[in-house]
Amino acid sequence: GTALRRIVFTDGSALERDAAFIKTTLRQRADFAERLGCATFPDACVEVNEFGQTSVPGVYAAGDMARRATVPVPLAAVVAAAASGTVAGTVIDQDLVSVDFKLPNPFASGRA
Image (cartoon, rainbow, N blue to C red):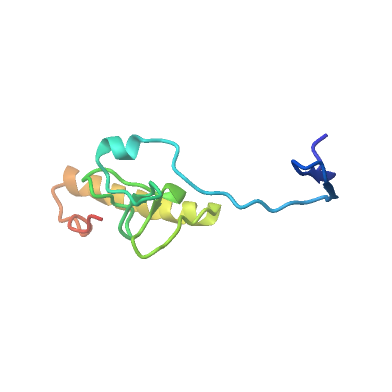
């Protein structure tokens, strides 16, 4: 079935359990940010500023694939991903409006 009943070790001993906590190493599986030339951290997270801007103009990142230099690990939570996506989306919209209507862009100089 799908329920945990026991953990069996390589020596054959077993522990009866109905739950387990597993530590995992988070890593990026896609290499598109690297191929685009975005600055990344050793864990392959894309470096962004507080507006989701990467080191490459016109490329934005959000969610657990991106983080600021002041954040030591990815924030792997739906609410954090949604919030960073909302901010990045707002900045993208402002970038497009600024280009289309030749307006000053308050986010233009803030690259990661």
